[in-house]
Image 1 (cartoon, one colour):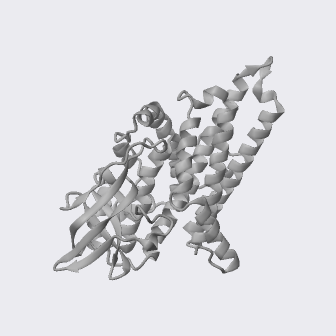
Image 2 (spheres, rainbow, N blue to C red):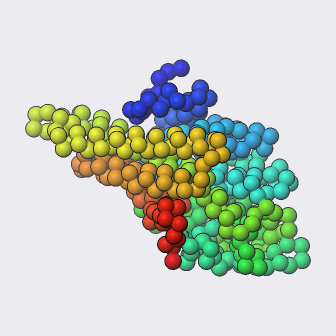
Image 3 (cartoon, rainbow, N blue to C red):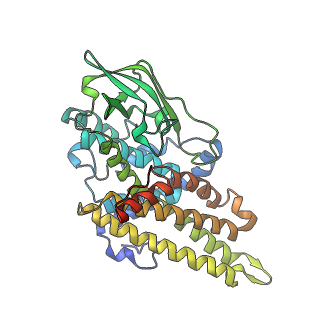
Amino acid sequence: MEQFRGTDFYKIDDLLTREEKLVRDSVRDFVEDKVFPIIEKHYSEGTFPMELVPQMAELGLFGITIPENYGGAGMTYTAYGLAMQELERGDSGVRSFASVQNSLVMYPIYTFGSEEQKQKWLPKLATGEKIGCFGLTEPDFGSNPGGMVTKAEKVDGGYLLNGAKMWITNGTIADVAVVWAKLDGKVRGFLVEKGFKGFSAPEMKGKHSLRASVTSELIFEDVFVPEENLLPKSDGLKSPLMCLTQARYGIAWGVTGAMAACYETAVDYSLSRVQFSKPIAGYQLIQDKLANMLTEITKSQLLNYRLGRLMDEKKAKFTHVSMAKRNNCEKALEIASSAREILGANGISNEYPVMRHLANLHAVKTYEGTHEMHTLILGEMITGIPAFE
């Protein structure tokens, strides 16, 4: 097999299985052939490239870790991470779409759903025939999801749902929403289908980040949800938090792809940009930035690799995922900022991907748990004392 074409200073490629390398290389080729040519236009226009969905499905990018009998690929978490890494090398919005479909829709249906729900939804979500979204965050409750006010009330044959969700990726285009609401004071999961009376999902406009991604509100006004659409194994706030752990895992890998894209752009540019009779790559201050970038990318790759193997061995804890998400998002933002500085005025041009990644990473650092919340998660793990309140 052709040697990996990318940033891999510590030769982590040598640690991957042949199947994992194949996934990584296939997604990398897809991003180069299909994402790069169109992403700047979609980002500029604030639209998601829907034409990529069937192509991603054909590559097996939905339900990567879901068993094959439900339409998934039944692959390792490391393979899933590598796929997210390469997708975000293209754009955070494209990776976000795949992350939601995998971690926040298929995972909860597989983990908390009935056999009937799994058979109904998972195969169609895997083929991209159906699109899903995940409704947890509310207008007034982000970092404190337990404070949610969306409520479900038991009625004959099902439940009445009232409330609203905010900042929901894929909401407007979703066929099914995995919605979390309080039923008799306890958080439960519900499958709210497009077309249910009283359910609307207006798109949120005016974003300066994740522009090539659909972000929505979810509004529930006496929405009747039939009994069979309750996720029967959902059991309190820990259920959506388990989903967030899955999503955070994909983010940790994804932003490493964005880091590499910015770093490789900065290296190429600094070697070709001549000032004072030599390439700017020959100046100490530029080399300092590049050395720091490569070091942080390598550290993030090592975190991801070990975390992936812990996930595959079912030994990973949510605190392990928090550390990787926290570190990698912060370092990705720093690397994108440094790359933008190296490119000078060209750093803000859409001829290069750096400013787009920089803007996207501001959102990615914040969602699925802010840097500060992951700091407190690790702080409680270290000390045994929760500092959230």
